Image (cartoon, rainbow, N blue to C red; front, side):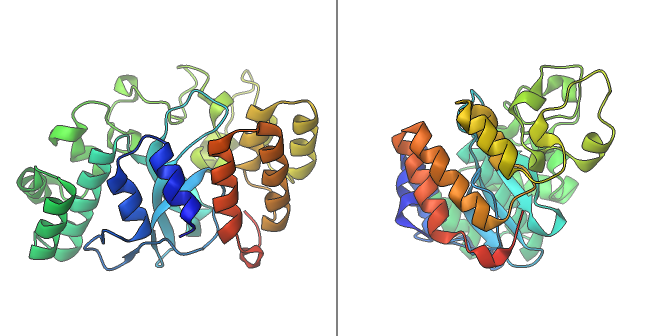
Length: 273
């Protein structure tokens, strides 16, 4: 992993241990999950922590810039159009999620997981293990775990009305989430059945995004330009040029860290997103 991601994660006021997971200084006892994450192609909104070559998929930080949306932790399914779901809203929840995933794969708690949890300070492994006997690794059961009881992530929410986060829910009866959402977090069925009465942002309309991005950037609309950059319709070559333009316009130290980190690993051979 590029050193910039390490520095960026720390600058985002996350615990040092999150950077340690992402760099591989602390290894997750789940063989399929690799850190530093490998490159399978992802938009810059994702800050990768782990990658899984089967699928492939990522577990990482979802950080939207130029918005009031708080960061969260997600799973991105690269093999399914890079569709992304919110799996945790805190680092402690992410640890609980990964502990449950490990228990599911290993069919119980092993010494490697116990050692990992001791090192990262996860103190309710037995509670997670007990829940696995009842609901397995189904995220909808996670609200019974202490760290998921409040600020439950969308993947673990049974009732959308009770969800207090800002990840897109697909419900048009709540706040206007679509103004702060990119295409990879909006399910395809929502995009295809968009209500006529609701104006859809241009970046959520299928097609090439480079002309729209350049127009928005000329207008100084960094928010919409960012959402456009993180929606489908880009070659990686064009996206790399676009994020450099956005970095120059943003003049933000943390965003520059993001841009440089993503540019350092964004292999154009991955084609497009």
